[in-house]
Length: 593
Image 1 (cartoon, helix red, strand yellow):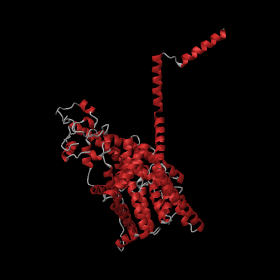
Image 2 (cartoon, helix red, strand yellow):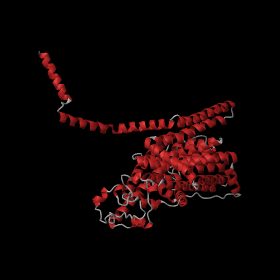
Image 3 (cartoon, helix red, strand yellow):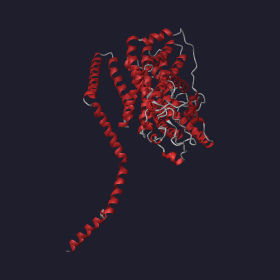
Image 4 (tube, one colour):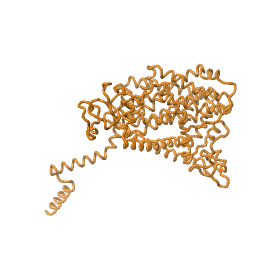
């Protein structure tokens, strides 16, 4: 693709450079492939859009970007304005869906998360608790804030909190992985979106794989941050980001999770969630002032009003049912808004050259980190940042190489919440844990980003996971269940054997560990030397083929019936009913004889 070839995306300037003649609107619509263009350039919406690799994309000039962005007719500006209004509408309710998803998760998993976070356990168990608690709460910011509060109250130690923070870093990426599943309808988009979501996972897993054992052996994070601590920490105010202020009022009309339940159970102030029930409002008046005994769902402290799913006299089961309904509602909102966002962006970018798109989005990696960090500080959630960017990766607007530094910046930005939480506590240990969270992510970035060879490792791992969705579209669901539930649950169960102060449990746990390690070694051997990889891919291909066959079965049957009808008309074969009439007449004739 020649750099000298000048592309102009405007309709009125769209011309065939080979002869200088303007192409009509119908002819332009027929040009839907780079193979049909004189410039050999790919435009958004082409039938071979996903066939072009990033290395094949030429470099556009900023002048071309400005012309594509800013030079439009009055009618085009009107369409752009209407598109932006609809885009803001879908984006707002997409954020509302994420807010409701987090709130409902806190209602459903608050009690379990509180029990998990309050356990004084070994490093492996603490790491798994961080993962499971974050998955249950759907927010690493909430998990880290609670962990910092627990350290500030003396409920857990600094070392245990560091391992929980590492686990929270892994658990936070489950949200954007769920969002990536919303693009299952298109194989190309699913592959890219899932790779864009799991690059966050791969970075976190690789960072934990190196820094977790290093921290166990040397306690370098604990010692380094301890040397940085001041003598005391003054009280601070809780900061709420502007996006949170826009989204929360709508979410608070539906459901408000009671975070005090999680903290009280974790610190041991309450033994179980049953101590909060039944919900009691004085004189039956539903507001914050009169409802002093509330459970997993509470009222708005600022306005005093109670959300729609708050119920006077509710039991724990009632609140959990409400949380389940809101969880379902949030998933519906997310899917609808995701479809709306993707469809609208595709229409707005239709016909725009990939050279223009990638020039506009291809910024320096370290600058992208600052952008990701800034956005996350504003929205107070790395999950919101990465979940909002994942559909853009699926569409091909943002390359995986650009998503990676944005994700790393989001990891840095989310530590801001923990630092603010530590300012509320008067104990310097709380600030120490918050700083450990910050430096864990910084050291992870220093290991896995500056050196190109190291940078390619998480990128290639994410691409491999994305390509797996091509073989079987059900793989993302299995991935989420295994990585975020099954493996942490198994490791947490194994670690429990070694915390019982019993020789019998310790010996049993040792045998279980030996069996698990043996199973892992055999699995690697089977995968590499017994055609395990090929067998797994064949199994997934068969599953996908059966699913596709069942989906198209009604259409295939209709097609076969129509072809058989044509064949009968052509050959004069009698229908089945005519055959029965002939057989019946023959039988009657033979009976008369």
